[in-house]
Image (cartoon, rainbow, N blue to C red; front, top):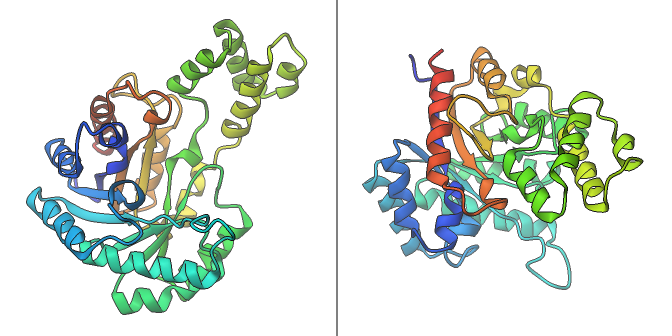
Length: 321
């Protein structure tokens, strides 16, 4: 198989191990290498000391670690802290300066691009072009649930990416936008919060078959179950259209392979990977899909490495078809 699509990893996948100090930075980088990954994304606010003002010494150390373990720096994920001051939000000028700082830090660490957040308005996004050109860096925005390509602001982003920002400004589609149902850890957490298992099954069936939220709200369900239903119907009833991938893949600099829990290495029941992988291949995508395990938000006792191995095995089967 010609490896047009490569599997990388967001080091965020090892959040549990890193936060609880089971592994330090070198530990998670070594683990990524040992698992066979070739490219990495780092979430700066989580793993970079003194962020948003890391030292040159630390950045050089990160670059050296990636070289030591033969890992390609794929993306530096920035964080715009709008509440860094208690008296007001950041101004446009401050957002621009923080973003330019991240471009500089990323370049020093060897990363070719920065992923930013939606605090970057289309107007600010466009204003970052000169800094990107000067530094020879790319800037991306993540499209994460509940966003999707038909949201008006995204039409503005895409227009900028395809015109003055072509080849410099792009985006990172996150597969959460295609999620069709809640994952196992979400459901187990709902039970721990007070949902009766048999009633939760009823809600799942209603969501799957009729998507009639009123049937739950007017039915024999407790307050926790009704709240869970409202959240479930809000999050998982209107996924992005997979067939639209071909319409925006030209702006995708890399992809977030989001997943929450896999029982095996064959199938994700919540995010339709079979259809998604087939579509991005047909659209001609070339680049990284970064494994992004986020089950730790729901259950920190789940083995992240086992989940990542299942995810890799599942995707390798799909990519080799």
